[in-house]
Length: 171
Image (tube, rainbow, N blue to C red; front, side, top):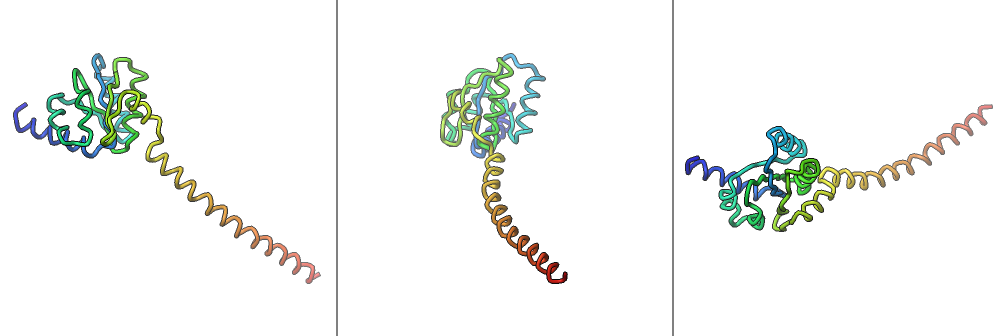
């Protein structure tokens, strides 16, 4: 890898560290290619990504970034799992770690907040962005449907009473 390629990689990593809602760092020693592909597929499905990068280049890219605290985890064979959604990458990493003992979560960062292994697990238990949006929409929509039902019910009652009166008057 020549200098230009390294500079490009550092720029890409810098973009990742700046734009990601969460970055999880893990050791992946002993994982097979198929297991890594499975991890990548899960991350992609959740809206995240997985990246293996040289630790030295990742540390250079971290300089001056909000999540610079994860530099301490960049030793050995590390893999970065990240996503814009502050929960998606953590969920993928924790679920994958439960099934694969060779995948060991070291920690991560959520914006400027450093996370240890327990912190990553706590973040993974939070509702995702989609789940939060769905619950907010449900809360907003419920009163509106109740109001519509309350408004519509008396009108239907009045209509049935008027038709009954009309039928009596006609008879």
